[in-house]
Image (cartoon, rainbow, N blue to C red; front, side, top):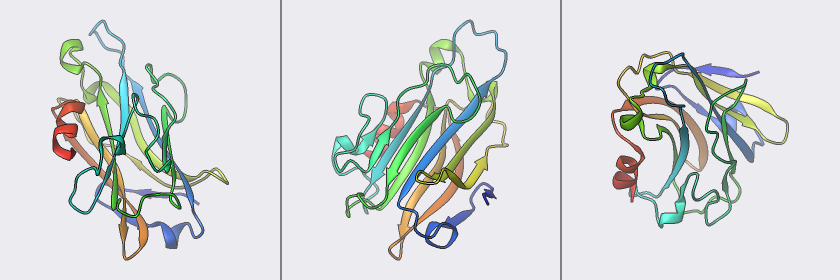
Length: 189
């Protein structure tokens, strides 16, 4: 049974999903009718961070131009340029058994491609969510539905996987920023 979590809440995956080794991170959203004249292109990215809060090498930034981490533990399933259809719009697979021991945290971010140029923001989207599920059984473990109104924000920190006392945990973050993907790169590189 899936757990609905709220902003800031955390779950211990070892307790809520014993035996989970391969996790799917599904991100989804629907585009409201807009008058910007341009299609929405949202991009999911993962920053795999060490104890110092930085990526150890550039390739631990997994996104549409780098689909697999160097340790092969994180695999981005590709860029969805429309958000059309039901269910997950972008998916990231995480093999927790392969994560480099120097990685302490994985931050899941979604940004709007060319948001300023296209005059777009997260206020023009609805039904945004992040969910974590067992890839082997396709069983959803937890879901966080963003209910906040991000009327100006062009980037969202959806959630994070992190290690505590040797166990993987998941936190719903839901923090919005008026920035692009480059601002996250600048922060974590």
